[in-house]
Image 1 (tube, rainbow, N blue to C red):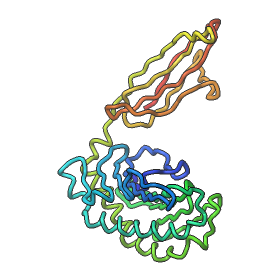
Image 2: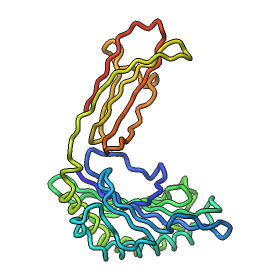
Image 3: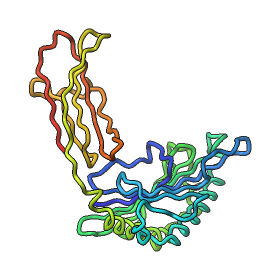
Image 4: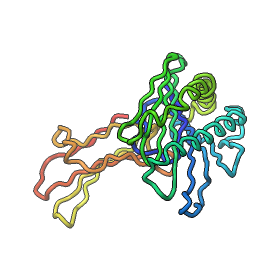
Length: 286
């Protein structure tokens, strides 16, 4: 299964999608503008970043109107007129929503409006679902899902915004969604996979190290399991004590971190006492 994401640049935590084992394409859009009492920022008011899985393949903003990819032979992946048309529509949509949501904003300085759109390819190159999440003031406001010609619409009640506020332009957007955005999203994902399939599907095995380092503060030591230099990012790293997995509540770390060369690393650590005589080992599934 492959996914294509059409999203904003500053994603709130609730808007972020969990990584899957399939390629993901991000098309990030952000609209930000200061309030009357806030000075202009150095950032463009509107920007788009296109990322296939974790590889940036294009960027443009309100000052650079022509989208450019990282490779000259990718100019045919998506028609620039399509991007311009989508961007214009989304920009106007952002402006409409900003007027609707202004009374609900908790941010009196810089206003940022976000949209995250996800479309996917299923097995046998079958077009899958497409999801749109919108956010304002740091909160996901609503979500629209389209699959098998059926729409499902949900409002996030924790954002303190009613459905009546958000729905006025919903029916119009559904038509644009099904007839225009969805097929372009799927086509663009397929085109990028043709160009970059070898890159996103490459496999680099991790280098594994078990490290024990003295801790002068406690008098004991820190045992760490380090996996580095691997791709793709999906990995299961386990620290064992006498052949049994160490409980998660004893472990620190575990965050996935990028390396400068495009690979990843992960470290899990455990504090032990000087009297600890257990045997520690490390296991990785990648």
